[in-house]
Length: 192
Image (tube, rainbow, N blue to C red; front, top):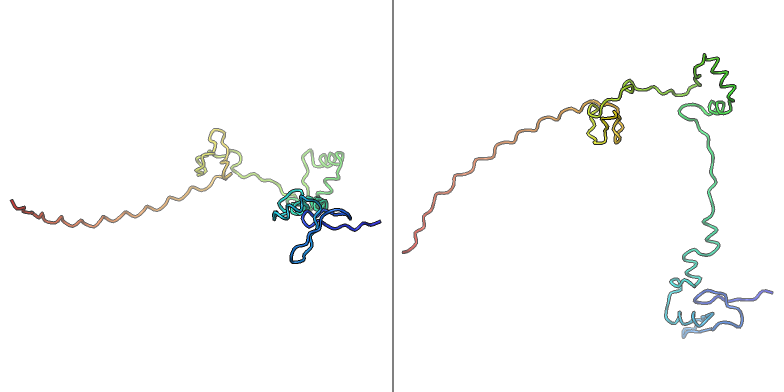
């Protein structure tokens, strides 16, 4: 059997038949309160959104179960396989599916050296990579350049650069205009 319930006008709790207090204002609007506490809070003009025990506060701060379940939805991760560094995906897949015996046979056929695969990009070190220059020679003004271990600058990670061109000399300032001669001395005679 379904029992008809009425929500409390202040706390929004369900009021079952035979419970609660009904209150009608002068303008004719009816209010139903579940307890004297809810009625007193309404008479004091308290806002139900500011009281933690009311349903209005729980709705505002998303404490209800339907709000809790909404946040738990996770996005499905989409797996995309792409080419890496210019090598197409088919070559990567073939390399991944190779067994160690197949790799050894390819290595023997190549004469003991590591084989080259398709259109893979090869790293070619710069000509100055054998001996990196000292910090002062690459023109970096950073204080984090290490002269002792001959590392490159941490901040700019730069290769040796061209030296900066010297700035053109600043124009010499023009001499100040001549100062006018001081005024002639004026002698004041005071009465004796």
